[in-house]
Amino acid sequence: FADSRDNGIFVSYYGSVSRLPQFVRLVKNKIIGTREGYGIAVASGDDIELLENEITGTYLAGIGIYQHTGFFAPKRVSVRGNSLVKCNIGALTYTAGAISVFKLSRGSLEISGNEIVSTSGSGLWIADSKGLERLSMTKNRYRDLGEGKVSITVAQVRQIKDFVSDDVDFGPQYSQPGDKTLRITDQMLVQQEQPRTFSFGERRRNQRLGEKETRRYVYRLSFDQMDVKKSNKFFQDVSWWNNIDLGCVPGDANYIYPVSSKEAEFGYIFDFSGASYRPVAVTVRDRFFSIQDGVSCQSFVSEDGVNWQPVTGLAYRAGMSSIKGNTVRLLLNEGGKLPDRVYYKAVFKISDGTFKGIGNQWNRIHVSEADKNDSLCFQCDFELEPVK
Image 1: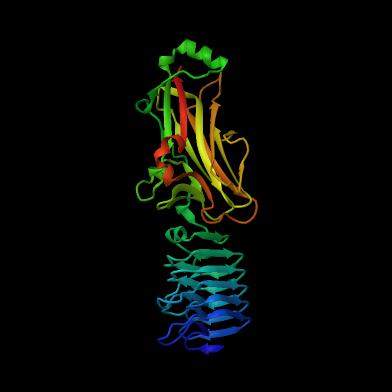
Image 2: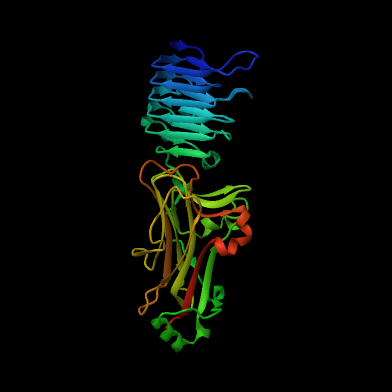
């Protein structure tokens, strides 16, 4: 199809009667130039496959998937192995990618193994599709792009239940390096409430100090503090994170989860240098949840940010039928110099592929558990003694 005024191929319907194209395969077509439209446009339909087509010189996107009426939005569409060269080059184009997806009220899309060369915008553009249920973007190849590989907002990703991609660099919204700390002061400490079962070394130290001189500091991340509409405490307090986001399903649960990648982690730094007390032990309580095969989740504590003690003895594996809670008490440099700082980190890894949707979670608290929040949520309980 050469030099079409509108679209090279249009999958939908014209006229006043709404129709739903189904079971359409467009394979190895050649589209050379459009004066005003797309190379291939899919504006309605179910079970649509676009396979190994060659598309060049289009005014709008080489492939456009969008909804043009209130009925029969595109549902299941697969875009695989296509070649797109010099697409989306029109002077007044309103699409922003060689493959553009926008204004969908539903849909399950696979975009994989495509080659995109010499476009004025991004390789893929995903926008304004609140109803998009699944999006998989993998093994696409890019060269000579005007902008980034994929243009998609954080808000859009959050609206997709099942999101898989090895193309997306989420940038600063999902990554925060640095050395931000939670600074602990004497005003934030409380007196030790009751004696515990101590080791021999701890008993001798407490006999010397007297129980009244010990202090505690407790940090919690509660159900409400993970509600994106009420609080941003997690991102205010956490020191660093990589491929991590805050999840909230109204009426269901709040949690922290890894976004599409192969590894994700975050960490806290508790800084006691401004207080008159230092930690001698910490009791950590955390929870992991995973339903994706091949995923491991594990947490650690460190006194220097280099040498890490595992909080979880073994990494939790995927396929868990319920949340796995964990409470562990760790001694901090017993008999030596007590640390000014204590580090906590949680790490997600996957053996094959990338994290999918919200299938992996940390500190997941269901709405029905909110009244039990104090006994379930993430907590670091520090036992402190005076600085010598």
